[in-house]
Length: 485
Image 1 (cartoon, one colour):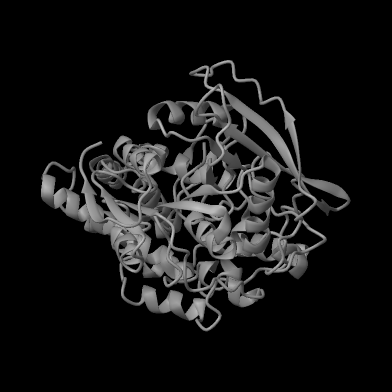
Image 2 (tube, helix red, strand yellow):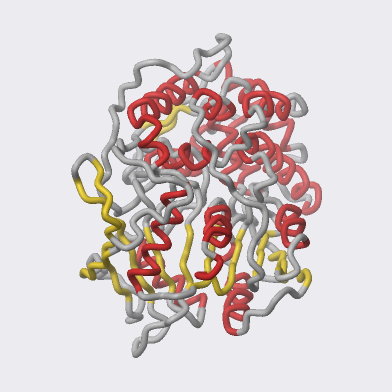
């Protein structure tokens, strides 16, 4: 199943030869579906029907036909649903999770969710099982930006160099071919190939932006929208990372103040001391028990902050995170291994695409804003984390690599819309979802109690709310808090 978003999983990029224009439904009239066997799933948790296939849209990559992997989770074994739910993964650059292990996860999810419609899943270009996956060299050539001081995290220069090398190798047409325009064109082609006139779009995290773009471009193909952990277009998403990390730290502080049984009564102070120590001498931990990850992992201050952020994806783990930070401050560095493994997994994932990540983000960047300046202005109000994020490349990539901006549009069609936010979500705070839904008469907003990011993927209360909505979509119903798991 998909990973939770979000962050610069520097999977190496592909090189595409042809781009697609924004206003063109690229591949329209050339879409072709070929049904094939799904990967062997010996541990399949149910007999629920899963059908797999390939979508071809008439494009080629370095002479190789572009093939997009998709799967359909059937809600009923005896019939096909004329109005399925089309899942839009986040990231950007996340896959839908269509390998054997991912499909087993989706079957388990389907058993719990009980949604009354077929679920259509597709790995976007350059992600997951879609083909081809053509990587650029792992040896960077020219850094995006050299560290401005000896204190700058040495990983930044390497990360920035890999990003810039991949972008340079792809070129403008290649980057545009991985951006939002081709993504929504592929979704359109998939619906055509499946013979589906209208579908419900289910976007999660950054996938909510792609879902909204599709709805604006092709309103006639949409019956309803489910937007989980919405990323509104009026948010400067490129400068969001400092705010998200700061929110994760504040949540540790707030939860410990409320429950009173954390290992430290002042998590911010404990974290500040550990950051200062790791700035002087970053420790290295062994990740040998975790398959598929690098055997050793250096915990720089920047990575420590990402570990805190990633731990915040799941509500209810705050006391455990604080306990691990406190133990590390006492010299038990191994206590951080589970947190480090999660960050390492993001960076080591072969299913994600760094090229799609940046091609999409930069195409949807607000060209009137200065991302690098916004990054620094945001950090100026965060003295605890500013020294460790100031030189990170995330605030400057789109400035260094200006792409034609994709015009997102301003309005959504009047379709039934369910907007969900996790109460404890620090990546896409509930206030974002509430304000977004308030702007649309057709929208209903739900805050899911005791839930973090992307609750529809794991929270029973959120799953039930969507199941009820899909059974009887309606135009708007205000705001509703949901309680319990």
